[in-house]
View 1: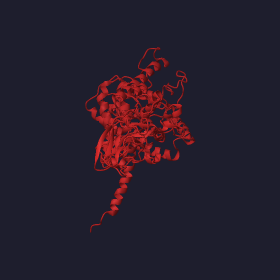
View 2: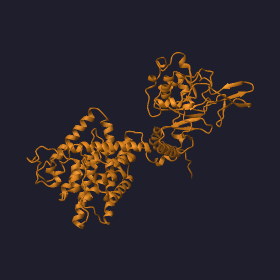
View 3: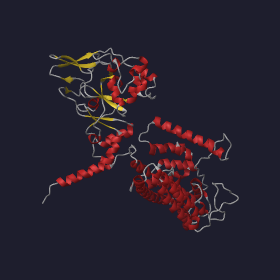
View 4: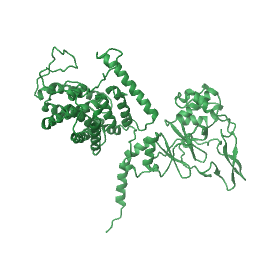
Length: 591
């Protein structure tokens, strides 16, 4: 929405969100993104024109915060496509240089200045004072006259705050970024090359210095301005040497595209944003060629500036493809083994104590043999408790009741019947019961293909029907499931059920809750030997939040989240180097 509002480009804003802001995209998210971008663009067009006196209230025009105008010449020669490719190469090289130097500067800031505090504030004041002072006195260094405020313009900050007789290039030091870009695109005169290159170099240094600072300095407009300066300079040179049919302003557009693409490594969204901003679909092919050339060259050296700062701040965003060194890892290498689990049937106190004792959003459901049944989300449990408050019923009657659907019971000729599914939970402490993720075989031999436990050789299955009350799915839908998020668990329960220090007093706290009807038993699971790229692909394409890892016997061995994948990417190089050192130490010496 922000990109769409700034440039008046709703389609470009949506593509930017798809390309840079999301690790998973489906039609529902795409439609919501487009509605937000369209609403932002409509709001800006409604207010921006009348507020600046360009149109009457109620008249929607083309006035947006950053608007580049239309080009008079829409022609280019075939040989100039090679020049556009070279522009892309230069943009990729400058972008890689920008990213590397800014990375060094950002690491220095993190070590010596920090993310907040008075040092962060003082740095912003110092950098702002230096840049403003430099731009004010830059006219002397560029060989021009001192800036003066004319009577015609008065104190209008958007007017060219230099005398009319000053060269055009000197005006760039005092113009806002959007107006400077528009001037470089459409001015028919010739900018002084020395002043133009001097302004381009100083602006490039200022852009490196300010990005990542504690102010919203932005990246789009500064990068576009820097690229437009070098593009305009090369366009004037080509027109002087060869008499190109393409105007210098068009080369400024190509240079701006190459610079921003080389810095941020955005391709399709950038091309569409510039097409919407300029209203010139004829420049589609040159823009596509430029952005792809800049991205390919820049990727040879480092990552884009967005990915670089995402890694610095440890934001859990998955890349489109896993790193090269991750392809040898398996699910067993990256999974979390200390998993908070829930039994198939548990007491109310145990369930509330578990979900309130952690911040996880998904809980694996295990049977008494340790076999994985499915995943239940925290929000689902909240909706169940919300429905229970309305119905004032428990899901199970007492300790001896069966499950809410047919349960498997193992019968031994000597020992008799034993209810495995509806048996009360063990008297272990909550911590030990939550972290129990292994097979849990003890004196039972669990069979992964069935929901029975082989106690002895003579075993048969018996179906036992249940009369326990279960909250219907329609009841949960009436309370907004699954879209409406309910209040915290403590607020969902009746007063006599509300936990005091994570405990429900009275008989209600001992009621058995059967969690199997609410578990997702058909979700994605992987084996221990599944490759890391396969797990990465499932998270990217299916939008998963949790990925259980099960063993060959059906028992839960661990769970993978996005954070586990990202942590594995950061830790893999160091562990890989350690393995190489150990292999070199233990390698036998051959004579």
